[in-house]
Length: 304
Image 1 (tube, rainbow, N blue to C red):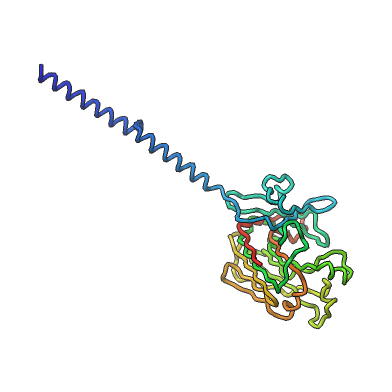
Image 2 (image 1 turned 30 degrees about the horizontal axis):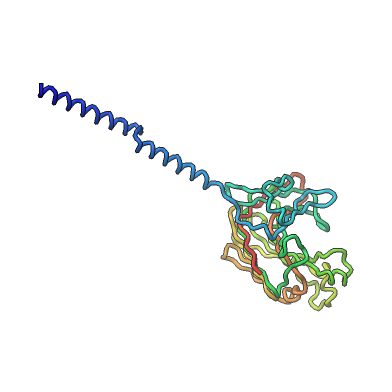
């Protein structure tokens, strides 16, 4: 009897151990559940990481979009900070959360005063909500922008349209405006940077004549476009970084920290008479029907 009892106990113990191993192998043990739970949490974390936001502080920028009647729509800080929920802005300024970029969409539509092209573009405001406080070349300024062309239409010949993605725009003080009898404070843009055929093109201004007087120099017609400059790199639809640095009598533009263009001449020296502000975005340079452009902006850094 004792021998039989020992055999039965041995068989029962063996069966119990076998069932325990089967339970563990099937993931039914507490240990198995922990492993599955950890795996699910890890997958959720990966999904969360895919949602990205642009590194753009809009507290010192206003935006202009190509709609509005009778006046084009502009949104200043602090209202611009709610752009993601602003139904008027959404079609023209929105987040691409997969790319971590702020997208500016432009089509031929309404235009600002004295222009024939439309834009979705940021305008720097040193004092939020105030266009009257700007900077001079003597005070200096630095701009660094990481961006990319998302998509852009082609003309009837199959050539990509072009758009201005960065500017330094001039501005008259109220006293200068009144001195030349101009209705507004607009002065020419000293810098226009284009995305053109997959390359970055720079245009600036030069005086029509170098010996112009202190009053005439304030007039738009005293300044003309230079011949322009193309960086060698082809950026296409990839990310690129533009840096602009200005100081009294000098302006330097760089692309991806690899190529540089320096302007340091009498035109830069005499430009010091104007105030300035940076612009970033999408200023589409065509009125072709069905034309469009989407520009992605990942990061903007400004110093003065």
